[in-house]
Image 1 (spheres, rainbow, N blue to C red):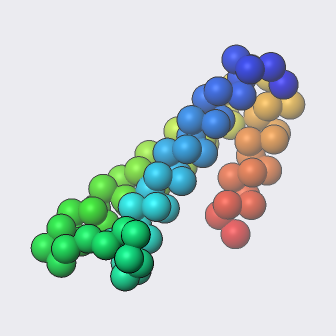
Image 2: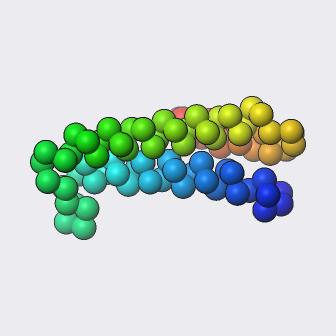
Length: 83
């Protein structure tokens, strides 16, 4: 797999990771990620947006990529994340 096809997949994974980080900051009371109470709901909403956007972006990459090997690898990874 060359860098040109790896970049969109890495971008989708990064967006999902940011969403997970924001969600953990909103739901967990970790000292490094402490968020004040009124902002928790807004941060949780942003986190859900990032999670959904990253998953949809990854799904579209899996179904629209012209390289069959990339498409199969992305679909397998999406199934792993979903379970």
